[in-house]
Length: 95
Image (cartoon, rainbow, N blue to C red; front, side):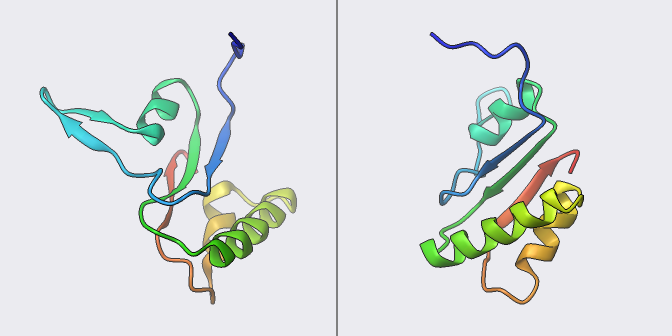
């Protein structure tokens, strides 16, 4: 079993629907984003719907370049989706 000493500050989930969560009995939210934020990750970028592979690739490459250039994850995602058809990507947490 592999164990991290601490959760990564930012996680990007570029696959379809991984940003979705489900509310269970007792109003408990379940999902990848919820689990990562609960584990201590500050920011999660994820899709809450279906995104075509080429659109996801273009968007995530642009987002990564913006983060490397010093933008916050939220600003990087906003810049990456501007002018592109990449519906569904959301920045959760402390972006």
